[in-house]
Amino acid sequence: MSKPIRRIVTGHNAQGKSIFIMDGPAPRVMDRGTASTVVTELWETDSSPASNEGSADPTLHDFHLPPPKNGTKFRIISYPPDKDRVAALRQPDTHHDARSEGYVRDLKNARHPGFHKTDSIDYAIVLSGEIYALMDEGEVLMKAGDVLIQRGTSHAWSNRTDEPCFVAFVLIDAKPL
Image (tube, rainbow, N blue to C red; front, top):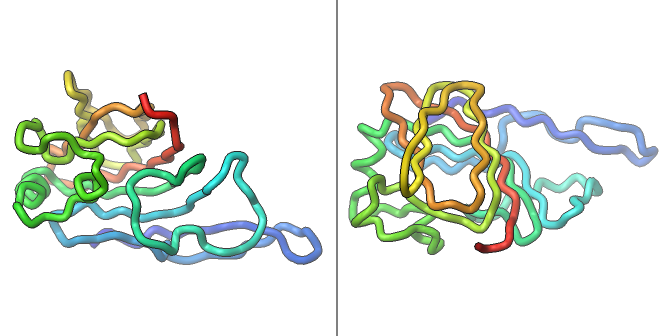
């Protein structure tokens, strides 16, 4: 289990003054155990331009990999080392979100069982640790502070170290290629 991520959200009171409306651990965390990625959903929008009205938490629903149509998602993912994660992903009864939602190619022939593709543009920022971004052809090592702009490509993440890697993602709905 990863350390809970503190989420602070601002809003407006009845007089239109800025206030803090939420402050505490992000409530929507998907953790399937020690060998799995841990996904913490921080915020979501369902339109563009986004609305700043209301004070409801838009993350309190079933987990979905891609952002809503015309919307965005903001999440932090903790990737455990591949030495643990890959074996767990290759298990026949493993529920892999991208696979279950129809976003994964042929896992049997993939270089990494985490390969997937969504109709989104994703901004990925490595917060700590290091991780390889894998494409169908090629890979690049990313370290803390590095940013990847993922433009609807088939990709996977491979943590070849002994420590978890934390990556912040902003996913924006995009037109399919």
